Image 1: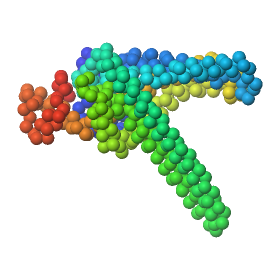
Image 2 (image 1 turned 60 degrees about the vertical axis):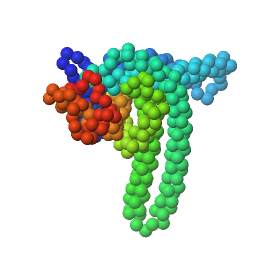
Image 3 (image 1 turned 90 degrees about the vertical axis):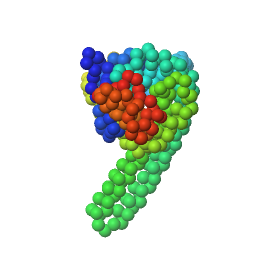
Image 4 (image 1 turned 180 degrees about the vertical axis):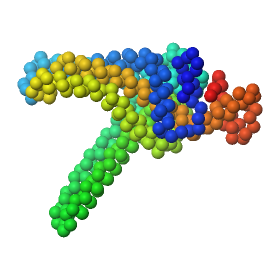
Length: 368
């Protein structure tokens, strides 16, 4: 992804639909070039999340399995109510901030430069009621589906326990112990990997059912377009690209895990050394200065990981539109015609004419 001369804005992404690794590389570049604006938009929600995290640490503090006075109990009750009272609006704030960043990055993808940030904020604010209700409904559905997934996961663990007991019994009565032991290990490894993979894929698919409708509304080409066709189209995109979406989600998860490990490893090592130096006798008691540093560092990691996830999902949304609607052909052919000094609408290929009729060329026409 190139950069316009004299500007930090990203150039348009003109390409036939590409693989997951290439998309993640482009998503990282898209995030890196727009990091300052992403941090600015996310700052209120990150600060509120930090406050909630500090209250949670305070709520979890104290001695374990000891008598609690009525005053301490009331303090914990107040902290719990404060956490719940802040977490609900914070959830909606995260959604609105993410939608603003997604629209900002999406306009950077399809045009020579993104729209001004204030325009993206105004567009999303006009959709606040739809986005709020959609977040509430989809959030409840997501929680229910996640609960069902966890139930299936624990049922799988129980079944795995019976399988282990059965294999152990057969192994005990087997003549060739070495062969039976190797077979048991292989079966358990394959079974465990299959269960974890299925759970990860289910959660990934459920995540896209929650994210893509929000992106469809936030990245609508016109604020006058009704919200229902946008949501319906987003689900068509999800089901049409389900295998690719889940593969992308797994790749993104492992990449984010590596990034988080690199960012947080220094402070985690320091916290372990500091904990050992102080000679703490219980793992439930963490010094206040260690808690503060861990919280601030966790906030820093949120500044990096959350915008990266938004960049990746936004670019994937565009890529799915490319595959479903042929947007890459329209942009590609129009850019060729522009360099030739011809009107983009004069290109006579039937496929491009049909696609162009459904998806008009963006303005301004992107350059390579």
